Amino acid sequence: MMKILVINCGSSSLKFQLINSEDDSVMAKGLCERIGLDESRLVYTKAGCDKEITVSEMPDHNKAVSMVIQALMNEQSGVIDSLSDIDAVGHRIVHGGERFSKSVVIDDEVVRAIEECNDLAPLHNPANLIGIKACKELMPDIKMVAVFDTAFHQTMPYKAYLYGLPYEYYEKYKLRRYGFHGTSHSFVSKRVAELLEKPYEELKTIVCHLGNGASICAVDKGKSVDTSMGLTPLEGLIMGTRSGSIDPAIIEFIADKENESLKEVMNILNKKSGVDGLSGIGSDFRDIMSAMEEGNERAKMTMDTYCYQVVKYIGAYTAAMNGVDAIAFTAGLGENNSYIREQVCNYLAYLGVELDTGLNKNNGEELLVSTGQSKVKVLVVPTNEELKIAKETLELLACV
Ligand code: ADP
Image 1 (spheres, rainbow, N blue to C red):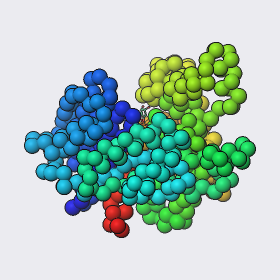
Image 2 (cartoon, rainbow, N blue to C red):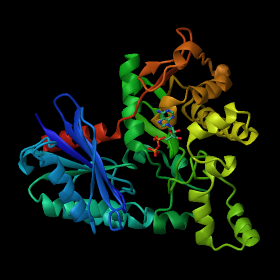
Image 3 (spheres, rainbow, N blue to C red):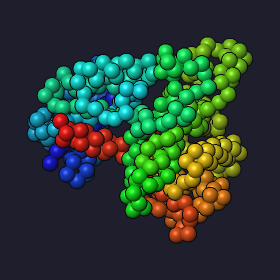
């Protein structure tokens, strides 16, 4: 039995799961919050037990990692006896640029190459690297693997990743579409093939990863051929607080009218737009749904606008792949919001999509929700990025 520690490190947070590879079960999981700030705390859950919260100073990520290790080895609520029980660590890395099209075993050269991608994801990559360094210091003998959010999309052809900008920006800065949520899109599209009992290499699947962050991916014969996020995770769909794609001239317009700096406008596009900005209610769709049910017109307008964007991408990606066999919904909304799935599918009769509205009322489980006659299959597939990271880690280490 192998135990893989999966780490997702942000600038002030660190999420972890210890996964048992024998049955893919989560032995323990948790989150360090407010690292480097006051009132930092560790939330830890052993499988089958209640949450435990430890409030403790965490001035840096090294302290956070050492608290995670202590929690995992705790006499009462721990799940391992010693550090050597951890066979490997899998790190989620946001940006792998053009350099990484697959997961890799981490060595000094890999760390340097990830550092070189910092410009492309200044909020995320440096934090991911801090996580790698902290783990390396505290667990020097344990092998580590980097799994990139962008890697799955490296199969996109140039016509999908180039922007209509001076080509020299691509040459000088590697300015292009990269796409994100690759671990999820890859996991879900593979699962679709398994559930439909079809070879992965023969299917045309559109994966709708609809969470706080949201992206859609066209997976043709097992390869990502287009995706809605771009150089950064701001492009594409309307999201919880992100605008998604807009006319680029809007940036200057807002800056002029509101007398804001470029930085402030970007903050508005990232943190105050999307469903939050449109509805004036918040970014959580549960609140938007309740408001809509109570007759709030802006909530209804927000939902309609959101669903319409999803529909347009499905249409575009069907065209890009010259057809579609399956549409999969995943992440917080995709898995749990039957209303959105129904609204989206209502537009797609022209493709031969026929939703089983009864089946579609089920939420949170893996399920085929189209009818037997539906030409295009519609599925709900809960994503599991941590499990996918653990599996990739294990696979790579088996080859080393
Ligand atoms: P993140 O991108 O932060 O991981 P999630 O995938 O958790 O986001 O998605 C968040 C969205 O999913 C929220 O708007 C929320 O309303 C919705 N959501 C998550 N879980 C549920 C649930 N159990 N029931 C209904 N909606 C849910």
